[in-house]
Amino acid sequence: MTEDGRYVQNLITERVLAALTIVRLYTVVEVDFTNMESEFDLLENSGLLKRIYEVVATRESDNVLMDFDTYVDYKRDDLRTNYCEPHAFVYDQITRFGELIGNALAPAIENLDVD
Image (cartoon, rainbow, N blue to C red; front, side, top):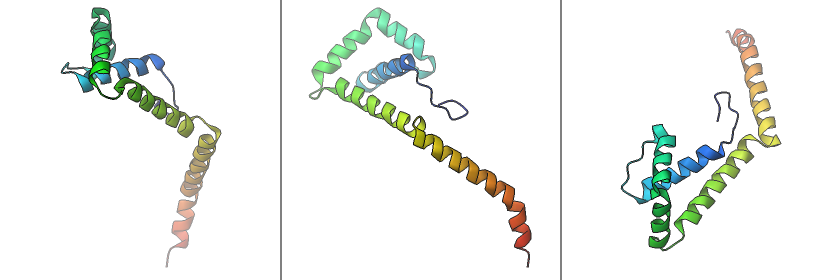
């Protein structure tokens, strides 16, 4: 989400964040999320990330990695629905218009409220 409320999808950051989250949840490896790209590159280039995925996939009774990917897909779809579809635009415009009217009429309403 940008500062002005726009949704911008960044699939590379999404993949890096998902991979590091798996590492954080299922290992004792400390992950520094303020330096995500370097952490990811270090794990990827050393072959540890692939090995972690293999171990997590074999140790867990359910397919945790598929469940995690499904959860990320759900959240992505929620963001698209809530911020990118026409109803989101219409809702934002109505809310903005209501705030503008409220701000414009507030002084007049205060003057009418005097006893």
